[in-house]
Image (tube, rainbow, N blue to C red; front, side, top):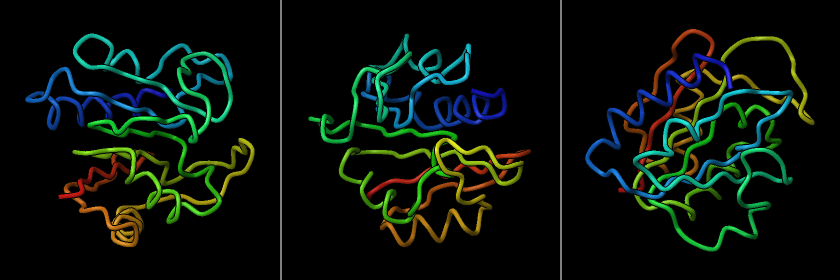
Length: 156
């Protein structure tokens, strides 16, 4: 995980989750790839109940496959994944069933192609707002910082 994404996720944690320590957090796309040394787990492992999910088994993965998410979490997070989703508007709509309180999505808004296995889109704040609206997610805060856009939303 690159430093800007970790910084943005730390912002989300500190500004939105400080009052609900101990909540459950599901990280969609949690696998450490290409010898990554850092993950969002380090931001949530002390005061929260973190679970990493991905499509394949690997480092930092507790649940393999969406079909094995058997509970609803307080929070869903996902960083540096949405650009690898073929239909991100549908993906966001599906993620709503996995959380109660907040969703936090971080996605690149620039940079070169990096297929894993595909590389589809880059997301600016207007695009993230439109995707949240389409998915029925209430956008609480959406902004860009350096090479990434962060979208924080809720159901309520």
